[in-house]
Image (cartoon, rainbow, N blue to C red; front, side):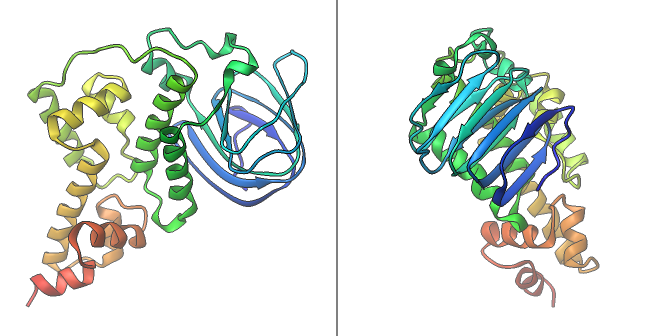
Amino acid sequence: MLDIDPQIFSISRPSLENYRAFIQHNMIVETYRSSAGQMISRGSLHRISINRTAHGRYAYRLGTGSFHRIARAPFTLGFQPATISLEVDGDEADYISIFQSPKLYSSLVNGDFDPEHMDGDALSATTDPTTLQVALSLALAIEQRDRSDPLLIEHLGMALACCVVKLLGAASPPSDRPMTSQNLRHVIDYIESLLGRADLSVEELAGVANMSPFHFSREFKKAASMAPHRFILERRIERARLYLADGKETLSGIAYATGFSSQAHFSNVFRRLMGMTPKEYRRSVRP
């Protein structure tokens, strides 16, 4: 099981089965089946939990309040605000848990989302289809270990945060300045210079553009006609095609030189975008 830094988030819980986890850029995504028992958690990240199976028994206490015993149907979303403790006593269930930075949430709304002062009932909701689809996509991304794409997971994480603030009643994100052609060029040049870095993130690119991550993703898609994640993937594949045509690098060397987490991840993306494997492409362009 993933060791979460107790300075970031402290959590004790019953034994877990089928545990999978992914951590990056102030975000942790977990999938697991929890045994019956008690959980106590608190930390500097918001925690979003979605139970994929129903609880027959479920009671919780948020902060210093009293325990509430509730029915928790399948696909109920619970939100634990950063710095607020949560105690739970329940029977076994399958879960998706996502830990995210409060900074991400504050960048999405203009002071209209204050979860630390919301009561427990307001921090729980039946998951709508869009939010559920994003959460399930995150779960699938980390459960396929050899295909985990950090950029895709970050992009899905931002989408989930947008869904959560809307689901819990926050206002729409504030408007912001558009991305200029000069700003877009600056970001693209930055991507090209660091294409081999596997940890290149949307948050980092948003900083280059001097925008919030959410607004940057929206404006980049308008300006470049594709999301940042897709743009970086296509640029990596273009760079990989040059390496394959040159014929000097091994496939694993090309994978790491173009920012993929593994040769398997590289081959999977290459085949999806090009309609053939890297080996087949190399044979097609070299005599």
